[in-house]
Image (cartoon, rainbow, N blue to C red; front, top):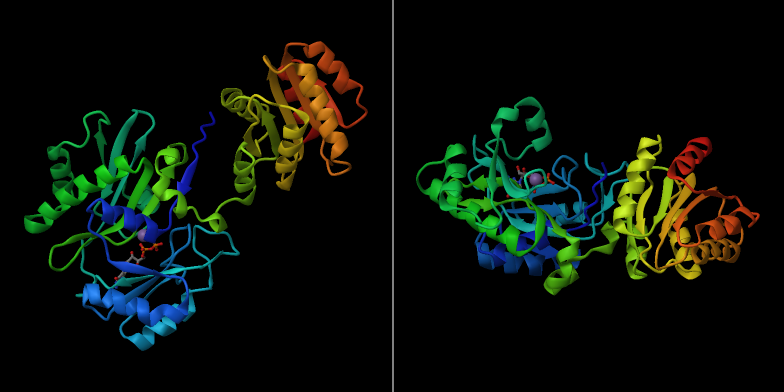
Length: 403
Ligand code: GDP
Ligand code: MN
C-alpha cells in the first residue's frame, strides 16, 4: 500500500540550531557560505570554544558525507583554509547521492570534539521517529554509532534497541534512564545521556518533526554527551504553525517539480514510476496509486488536483506531470461530485488543445459521477490520443497495453 508523507528536510547546521534552542548539547559550529569569511567565522567560533582544531562539514541533504570526503579535520588556520577551499563548492558524491553528487553551497565549521582521539564505545546512534504501526513515537538507539545504521540492522540487529513513547504521556524518566543504561553508560556520562535523551525527545515533539537522527552521539573524553551530526525531517503539514522554520527551506535541495507545484497550490509528490497520475482528492489518489501498482504499473507521482478540475488547472497539472521524463502514460481518475464530469472532460480536451503538441504520451481518462456518460462522449470524440474508461479495470487494462 502506498503511504505518502511530505517532509521538509533540514541541513545539519539548521537542525543543530533547533537542538540548541531546546537545550540539547551539540558540537558547536558556525555556518560558512563564502570562503572569504573563513577567518572571521573561525575567530567567532574559537572565541566560544577555545580550540583551534576544527572539523569542516559539507552541508547537503544527504548522509554519508564523511565517506565522500565531505567531512575533514583541520588543526590550524592554514589547514582550515585549505580544507574549506576543497569542500565548499565541490560536487560531493556520497553513498546517498546520485553519481553526479550534490553541489556544496555551504559548510559547517565546527569545533573538533574528538580531542583525545577516537576511543572505543564513544559513538552512539540515537533517533526519534514515529512508529506508524503502533501510532507511537519511538526512540531507536544503538551502541554502534558513527557507522551506517542500515548495516548494523543487517549484521547485528540485536544491537539496535527501541523505546516506544506514548505521545499523550510523553517521555517518562525511567525510559530515558533505560536508554542510557542499555548504551552501557555509567557515572556522569549516564546522567548526561538521560538529560540528552529527554531533551531530544522534547525537541522532536515541539518542532513537529518526523525524524531526528543523531549519528553519532558522542561521549567525549570528559564524559559530555553531544550531538555530532543531525539529520532532521519536519512534517510539511505542520509548517503553518512554525513560521520560524520557513527560512530553513533550501529549494536547491528539493525536487524542482514539487517546488513548482507548491507555488501554484497543487499537491504533487514525485515518485519513481512511469504512470503519471492526476486525481482529485488525496484518498482517491492513494487508492489509484495502489490500483496502478496492482495492475503492474508504477506511479510516477502523487497529484491531487483538488476540487476545481477546470481547464486551467488540468493544463497546469499536465505540464507538471510531463516534466518527469519517465512518464509513459497518464491516468486521469476523477470523481465528479460537485465538479461535473462533463466539465472536467471539456477541461481535459481544452487543456490538450491549448498545449499544442507537447503531449506525446497517451492519456487514459476515467470519469465517474455526475454526467459521466456525457463526459465519455466528449473524450471519445475529441480526436486526440485520449482514451476513456468507465470502470477502473478498463483503465488498468489500457495501462497494461500502453506501457
Ligand atoms: P555523515 O558522514 O554525513 O554521517 O557526517 P557526520 O557528521 O556523521 O561525520 C562523519 C564522521 O566524521 C563522524 O562519524 C565522526 O567520526 C567524524 N567527525 C565528526 N566530527 C568530528 C570531529 O570533531 N573530530 C573528529 N576527529 N572526527 C569527527
Ligand atoms: Mn552521521
